[in-house]
Image (cartoon, rainbow, N blue to C red; front, top):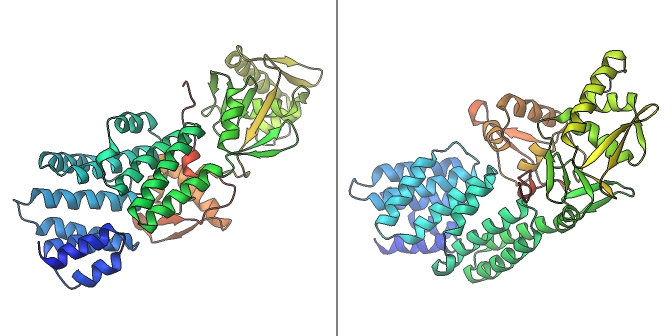
Amino acid sequence: MDSLITAAARALATGDPLGALNRVALREDAPALALRGIAMAQLGDLTRAKLLLRRAARAFGPKEAVARARCVVAEAEVALAARDLTWPAKALDAARAILEDHGDRVNAAHARYLELRRHLLLGRLDDAERHLEGLDPAHLPPPLRVAHELLIAGIAMRRLQSKPAREALARATLAAGQARIPALAAEVENALSLLAAPAARQVAPKPERLLDLAGVEKLLASKALVIDACRLVVVQGTDAVPLARRPVLFALIQALGEAAPGGVARDVLVARAFGGREADESHRARLRVEIGRLRALLKDLADINATADGFALAPRAKDVVVLARPVAEKYATVLAFLADGESWSSSALALAMGASQRTVQRALDALAADGKVQFFGQGRARRWVTPPIPGFTTTLLLPAPLPGD
């Protein structure tokens, strides 16, 4: 490896892509192509970066397996930054195995962290946590120690565990200081701001108030019956009744919880659950059926009693608390993913949300009509972006399994 390649690699390692390009911008050999690709990725031109890295992988000879594997890892990182969640994970796994076999432990660990970041984006917290436990960051360079701690913090925040998240971010701050890479320090600062940002809004009992992650965690650990509209679940202590796939039932329990200990008229419940239609006898009959289903699901947590003109919630707990998203928005989950500042395709959003691509596309079209999101590109190359919106749930606080699930 010649001196210019070495100097360019060192510049990239310290977060100086322009310095690296000054040394290799006009070269077409395989190592220079790879370094140019990484530099373009650091500068944000992900499309150009992907092309350069693929050219570099092809340019390396058949005996240069390690170099080709490093190109694959770099391309996987570019795909993750571009939110291309359909990028073949098996290719990354094969590259990691080659790097481990040839003793390149640092790049092999980097490949592993990329895999774990993808698990985190997709909400596969158990998979991410299980693989993370087998990694020891003590002997890794500071940038990878930052990645390790950010993953720990991300998992903890998605699991509503504020103390482990805060401790991990404190360690990440120290490692970022040792790395002396401004972009890494900014990423840690952003994670710290997410930890302090509103995670939910308590709408009942009055008055309304915003809660950070620690506040939500404390509330869920209390003896109160919590009707959580952020995650569409009813929780009391270690008992949880998920209603994410039962939107009508959740609309009913939310309305009853907001009025507790008082009752809610049948016409109001019909409007909340069935879309604001004027109640007739068929709607009232359907309401009785849905209330019966809700009673069966909540039998260990609360009763639902009939009143003269409607129904009332009678919880086993002394207090009933209703949580909503920090900002009321029909498509808040889509905005939550887009709030990370990266560009997403509709297919990647559908994969991360576990929804159909058509459902996601309808949400994006509605948000675009309201001026809340923007897109660039056409067809399969179209990407959706939005600046972070104050008060919105961030990707680290998206719905995930509650403790004990």
